[in-house]
Amino acid sequence: MSQARSLIHDQWSSRLAFIMAAVGSAVGLGNVWKFPYITGENGGGAFVLVYLVCIALIGVPIMMAEILIGRRGRQSPINTMRTLAAQEGAHPAWGWLGWMGVIAGFLILSYYSVIAGWSLAYVLNAASGAFNGADSAAIAALFDNLLKSPAALLFWHTLFMLMTVGVVARGVRSGLEQAVTVMMPALFILLVILVLYAFYEGDFVRGADFLLRPDFGKVFQHCELLPSGEKSCRITGEPILIALGHAFFTLSLGMGAIMVYGSYMPATASIAGAALVIVVADTIAALLAGLAIFPIVFANGLEPASGPGLIFQTLPIAFGAMPGGQLFGTLFFILLVFAAWTSAISLIEPAVAWLVENRGLSRLTATASIGVLAWLLGIGTVLSFNLWSGESCQLFGKTWFELVDYLTSNIMLPLGGLCIAIFAGWAMARASSRDELQLGDGLRYRSWRFVIRYVSPALVLLVFLNAIGLL
Image: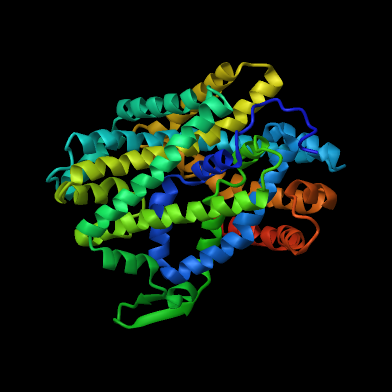
């Protein structure tokens, strides 16, 4: 059926091109600090095993569902959901699922561009030697001065948005495909180089132990020291909920990106095979990032549990003190820029595709229009770190940035993923999903259909309830 539907947009030239684009969408800023950090804090290798189980039950099935929906519709997420709902005899309200994904991606892009701009600024800082010999106070001042300057944040936000628009405006093959064909291999090469650097200049044994040593106690219980000095431990499922949540969010599910990329996927390519490769590549990238970061952190006596500050306030101290730190610090922040860039182009693409289809705009005009709107909305995030950071400028106790981040990450994306699973498992006819997945009617297809109908929705619902604080 997907072959018979007329193609409005270009297609990826090959299955490999689609995989690299989807991996680029999945591998972002979060992979570089969040996954290594939560792995080390929640049981190391034991947490990785739990995470892989969660990926098998959430990530792979829902990614397969989102790709098959996209390829079957061959349009933007909005028009795809409308078309397939009518084709499958489902309620027209399913069209709102497409809208939610596109809007979520657009909102995320508006603040993602600002945060990615920090990486651009730090490439310049690292290359110019600003970290050399700097202590923690100097590095903290450097970061604080960046956040307190609306002009500086706006400049880097503008530059990053122009970079994103410049790629997407060129089209699927000439823009998206050419960009990811260069950036994704470069990203993994940079990761390997940084791991080798960490091996020779960092405390590699301690870093690898922090990241990979299995500690099942941390997965199933939480311990803390009481004022009396005694240790108190309780059984908890929090690390499992963390693994579930990251398994969902790390793959860019529910924001329309994978769906629109799937719409450009060749009809003969294996959806199941592609989804598995994407998940494996995404996990490898996150683990390599951990092996590059934590040996350097431990070698310099720094705190590994620093979250985002690990990148912008802790690691620069290490790069400023280590042999070759100026070069490898620059490479590290170039890596961050590449990770953010490949994710950003996937965030803007669903809205661009809809404008091309529904408003008859050229791709250049559509991309520029969405880029300008996202840039304007991003000014709210720029000001959230300085002029609008006070309580008088907050909504519901949150800055503009915190509010948009909460709305998208905690509400829109989990709901989107839940609806994708329900639509693929319940609203689509068995024959339709079986035809698109090309798995026949054997064990593989029946297993996927069972998981997407019962297991994945239940687990994503847990992610949603945990995200909004009900668990």
